[in-house]
Image 1 (cartoon, rainbow, N blue to C red):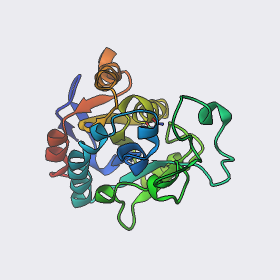
Image 2 (cartoon, rainbow, N blue to C red):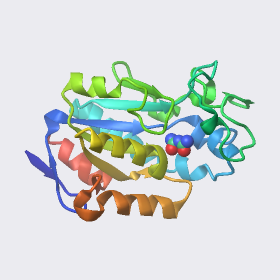
Image 3 (cartoon, rainbow, N blue to C red):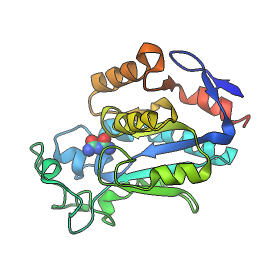
Length: 222
Ligand code: C5J
């Protein structure tokens, strides 16, 4: 068993039980005309982390370790979209509405796709999720169990919404979780900083945080 340099203390890594989970790196959150922009956010913050997310994905692929992608999206008939989600906020376009990149956050639409630079390759699992947490109403738990995964490295967006929710879900299910700091982002820098602080507070109450370089250095020896 090795260690990854991390906060609040070294992450005891077991490479044969480790996977990368990339949360919602979709055009709808990163490009003008998508859901994130329709809520009034500065989406350029999201596209800036693409090179670090890409480095991490490539490192896992090179080491032969699993890469799992998630996509926040809904069925075309919106039967999995509760009013409590559709009606929140004051967006220019709501989930399911027709936008410049197709229907907002609907499965199969161009805007719902993962950014081309980070696109999954053959054999990588893509989890379509209707909620913020990637375990809710998906097969993620079964996929991880089948692959023998017990430790998860997290990347993606947004840090305090879908990333943190999924980390908490994973932690409650017994997974050890490590967040890659440069490979996650929020529309609100102060929320990213707060999420990182609360995840690793109280002796890693939800999980660890680490720099991309330190994660890559560890898996290079996997
Ligand atoms: C939302 C996310 N809705 N991926 N999603 O903020 O964080």
